[in-house]
Image (cartoon, rainbow, N blue to C red; front, side, top):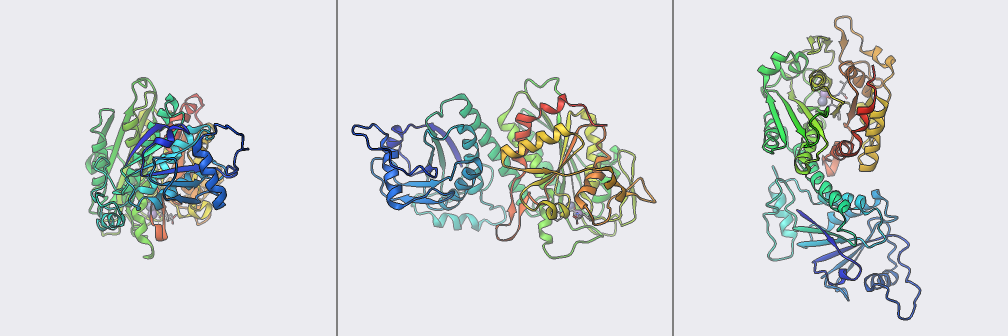
Length: 526
Ligand code: BES
Ligand code: MN
Ligand code: ZN
């Protein structure tokens, strides 16, 4: 799928040739302007308002009205799209549902038009592009028939079934090009917003795609290859370690999780450094990369276990961020990505409840439950992060079912030892509409992790499960500003629309681009 940004005024919109012109309409804008004789009110809005009044189109979010043979314009079809009060959330929702329906109707080129009344258009532009890329994404890797089903819906005889040759994944939608049009599209800030949103759309798509791939198509080795591929870009450095190197580093906790699987573990390091970031300490992102979580010897129940293929969505989000960085090439950012990745399997060699392992930090851990494996791979990565002298470390993990109980599928859980970092991340979540909510880290919660046989146990009792998990991680993050995002409820959807969401790539990129400077000014929490 390609995007274009075009300057169209009310007048030039009339002569714009396109298969379908989607016109965003706010509620309360269907009143005809007071009729002045000789009024030069632009004919497009005049015409559309007449139709709205005739059809009582109320422009509520997501409502549409198709005009088959529109007068006055070169567009073959016009689709009025209600965006309510035009908040960013309403625009995102309306554009997403509109393109979900429109994508299979056989239009090759679609224009999304916003008139002058849309102020602060940069944000609307970004959210529109993200909403469209989300809507047209199609998973085909292990379901090639999805492409054919899709193509058969297309009515244009010349419609290609091959889809997008340029993009790496998915989206063989009938639509080849979406043009976003607005009267001020020439300005530098619009161009910047456009570049950001298209790069972010591709990062999110990569995260979704790898989240969706089944565990036999997305092994630790495969994730290593995805990183190596990103490393072919001049601005990204990648290093992928296997079991031997990880053993040498002393990552006894990480290794204990991988022991039950025949798939060899990988530890991935990626580094992006912008042209003006020579002396800048990095933000380090750590992504949980359990490519399948059976629970290990503390085996999970069978129902819904397939969804544990999504247990590498933290890792996928870090890969997505690096895809976006490689395309956008921001000058003043230094970012390191760390991904510990392996399977959690039951086996004769698997780690057992009660086993004590020694983490890279030197702390010993009593593994009371082998299903609490995420924290066991993350703790060694957090220790490893120290060597980059990070100004902040953020780990991203589908860590606890308890977080889903606490926050559902709307907000990710946010935990941090640093108030400024926490507010910066929370704010980035609000603007990117990829929201999170801060959770507590009182020391009393750590009491649950006391062990008679090791420095710390890997689980507490059932209460406050997402907090005790974070308290475990915090022990390995004392020397830097640290935040932990529990994305167990937000990284994928279950049920009929089962699939990865690509979250929190949007939040992380927003944080990196506009909020990450804040944490360098901040005293590290002791
Ligand atoms: N990957 C799971 C967390 C998870 C569970 C995410 C369900 C999404 C939905 C994690 O490794 C896990 O199994 N956590 C256990 C921890 C428990 C043993 C303390 C959990 O949440 O049940
Ligand atoms: Mn688990
Ligand atoms: Zn897990």
